[in-house]
Image (cartoon, rainbow over all chains, first blue to last red; front, top):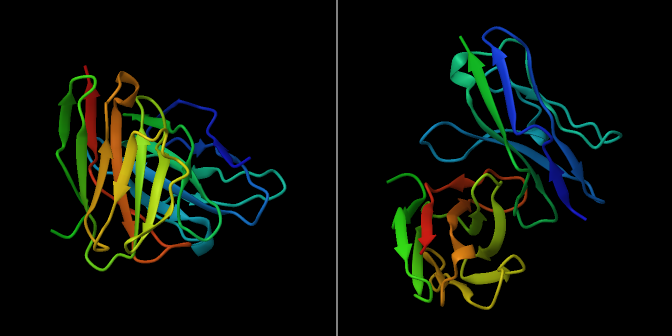
Length: 109
Length: 114
């Protein structure tokens, strides 16, 4: 079965603290994984994808095939990082996305 | 406009009414996707078009749901005889091709069935 699990519905941290948003996936093939973000009153947008191994807005995510995880990390959270974060898996060659349930990140001043 | 545009933004329908939701993808984008997002959940895949061809409709929840993209650009998602469980945000996304490319999302249409 193809599935994405984000175990935390809400993660609340103080500004400057490290952040780790967890994502585990279930997929038998070679996965393509993404993190999408939705800021308040804005549309869903791509944050980063595992294939490009980039750091966006200080966030990184490493694909761990052994643990089937793709956790999102940032060493020092900023208030503007407060948003809903979705981990997503793209199976096959169509580009369709299977999303997790999302984690709300709340960064307190 | 440069982004994916969806209309209407909000729709209230009486149970049993038919609705049509429109998506204008980014010009030149080959792939178009529809997702359904229930309250507190992540988006769930409904259907996918490559140009005018509907290549995957495995996520459509019932035969009351129908999608089309006749000229390979604008797409319409139609829901017949709406039920309360159809209440959700319907998201449209487009991408320039398929695998590995960024999907650009619209603002969504919030459908409430009363």
